[in-house]
Image (tube, rainbow, N blue to C red; front, top):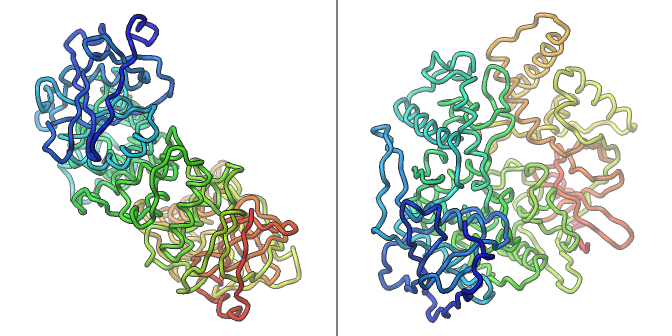
Length: 626
C-alpha cells in the first residue's frame, strides 16, 4: 500500500470551497483486478443534493487510528490527500466490483453497482477535515447525504478466510430461521447438546466461532453507525471483497433472543445446556430496533435526543463531540434544542448545554439516569452525563417509555430547574427526605450465586445495623422487601421489551431462584439435586432481574428504615432526595458548601410519589454546584 511517505514530489490536494448549503463532494475511484498492487487513485467531483445528483454509494467504515499515514492520489496522480489506513483499505476494496452471497441460490455473484465507475461519498476525503467551519456545516448535511445515496455500504474490514466463512454461515442461519418463522422455535435449540437434532451444526463446529468473530469486529461499536444504519433503506455490508445484506448480521441477536438460534451464535458466554447469555452484542440489538423504527418513519427523524443519547451511550467516537453531533440528522427534537455543530466548542460545555436543554424542554429529569455511573471527566459538573465514557452499569429504569411509570418518585410533577453557567450549577426543585445509614459492599453476582443463605445473612446484617425497624414499603415480609429492593421491583423481560413491575406472585420466582442456588451448591459437593423445568425457568428469570439491577450498586438502609439500592460510591450520611420531574430518588453528596450529584437511588416504598406527598411544604431549590 502506498503511504504518504511515497508522495515526495507530489503536492497536497487543494480543496475547492463548497459554494452551496446542499453541496457535497463525491469521489470517483480508478481500479481494476490489480487494485492491491496500486495506490488508491480518485477524482473529486462537486454535486448538489437538491439537483438530482448522480447515483453514489455512501461509505461507512471504522476510522481506527486517526493517523493519516496513507494517501489517496488525485488529479491523475499529481496531488494527494492524506487518509487513515482504514479508509485506504476500504477504498482499495471498493475499487473493483464486490462479490455478494445470493441467499436464494447459495452461490457467490457480482454485486450490481450504480455504474461502471461508481461514485462514493466518504467523509475522510469528501469533507475537508482541516476546515472546522466546513465540518460544522457538513455534519448537518450528512442526513441527506446518506438518505439520497444509491445505497450505504458498511465496510467492516479486510476480513480473512474464517470471517468470510462466518458471514456465509450467518446467511445460512438467516435462511434457517426464515424457513421456520413465525412458527414456535424448536425447543431443542435451548439444549446445546441437541443442536444437530434441530438441524444446526453441533456446538463444537468452528462456524459458530467464525460468526462471533465477525460480530465482535469494531464496526458495530461506532457512534456514526446510527445514522449510517437508519437513514437509507438500502444498506449493504462489505468485508474485503465480499458484500452481503445488512440483515445477515443485524438479525442475529434478535434470532437468538427469540429462541430461533442458540446464543452460541453471538456469545461464547452461555449458561450450561440452555444457551442463555451472560452478555450479548448490545449495539446490534439497538441498531435493529432503531432501523425498525426508522422504517416505520420512512427513514426520517423519529426519536428524541435524550432517548438516542441513552441508547447510544456505549458506542464510541474518535471525537467526543460526535456523541452528540452524530445524532443531528436523526433526533426529531434537534432543531428545538437549538444545538449548532461547533467542533471548536469544549466538550464539557457541549455536554452540559445538551443535558440542560433536554431536561428543560422535556420538563423531566429522566436524563439524570445517564449521569449515575459514566462520568470520568473532571471538567463536567457531577449532574452531566459523560457520553464519551461507557457506563459501568445499566440505568436503574427503562428510559425508553415515559408512559411506563413503574417508578414515579415525584409523581406527575414536572421538573422545575435552572442552570447557572458561571458556576456550572443546576438548581432543581425538590426535598431531602432521608439519609443513608447502613451501606453494604458493592453487590456482584458471585455473592449470591450458589449461596442460598446470602439473602438471610444479608437481611440479618441490615437488621443488626440499627434499632430502627425495616419499613416494608407495601411488602408482606422483610424478606420480600429485601428481594423487591434488590430487583428494584422490576421483573425480567425478554430483551428489547419494556420493563414491567414485578407482579404480586413474583415471590415464586424468588423461591425458585433460592432452590436453584441450593441445588447448584449441593451439586458442587457431589449431591444430586434436581429442579423442575418450570422452577428452572423462573429461577433464571429472577437471576436476570437481579443481576441487571444490582451491578455496581450497594444495598442501603436509611435513617428512617427504608431499604434502598444506591450507586457505587455512595457513603453513609449521604442525603436521599426527591426532585420534581424525577422518576427515581437521588443521592446527594455534601461536603461543606459543595453538593455533588451521586446518582439514582431506588428506595422501596417511596417510588410512587409517597415521599413527595409528605414533604410538599418543604419543597425548595436544591443547588448541585460541583
